[in-house]
Picture 1 (cartoon, rainbow, N blue to C red):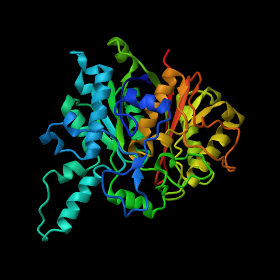
Picture 2: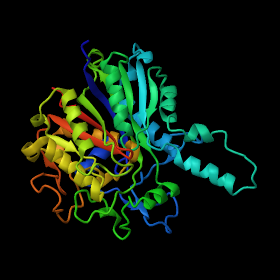
Picture 3: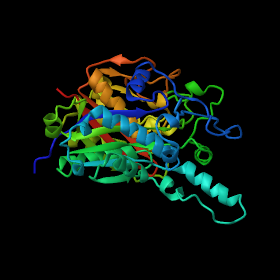
Picture 4: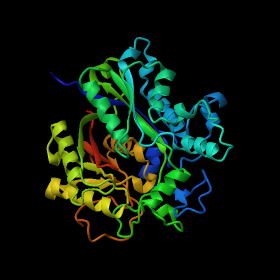
Length: 417
């Protein structure tokens, strides 16, 4: 069976550094930090008091009051990003489009955690009477966002959520890719959203010693590959791309931004939260993606690393790149956009995939900002694109995402010619 080609025909983003995908891309190129003191709750008693929140997001600009009450912030951010991508693609402007052949596959690592917090706290501090909001469960469950997207636009194809911690939305992209390749859908709205800047989330990750505590200097706290990095910065937001079967896109005259060439999956099988120290899972997932794309190692021009700014993670992923690519790694432009957006957990994969797509489309690699001190544990010959964006012809870009539990997912985008 000959697999069908899959292309990207629409993008949408709602991030800590831009509330639309063009704003997001401009901020990436200019090295804008999205980190600032937390405003969504009083964080004064927490070890970490800052995050990468979405800014200037007014609910009334996007939802009426009744609609907003049915959505956790995770769903709100996701639905706004999906609306932008669908409009950007123009796919529903064709009166002949078959909505039974368009699906929604979404990724979220946690889902409606704020709703869960509020409802359980209200019960625990009440008089013991079990009075819960009727929207408690529909707002909380991680799979509800693609349901809302499908209902708003009448999309009746495959519809579900992938949950694999920080790899969730990359898993969603890969599932969408394979379903279109196999002819199970003409197009899929895919991406992810997360809204985990909450008391229990920040407190829980603090207990794991996973977050930076650089409260005196939030803007420079996300320091991937820097010797003095001390943990990741929590981010929130949503992102979406429209994946479409190539012939279907051509037939309707769609603008094509990139081709999705391949995807890879693997497991570390090592530790609940720490990566394999030699980056074995990362090595395997990149190798699998390159084999799936049917390309050579030297074809990769750019890697958007998972690069969370954690002491162990950055080293393990860098080791995997050196092991897989050898000296070819020194010709690859590498970066971590988490230095600007923070870590969006389940939505990290999609916002970084969008960054990779834009790099392929525009031949520009955004910087890894906040680099001050070289880490002697990292290969000094690798170009991490420190502090300033670089122009380079990008024919193939690879994007990594790894999640707690050892989940690894990788996608490769190809320049469309």
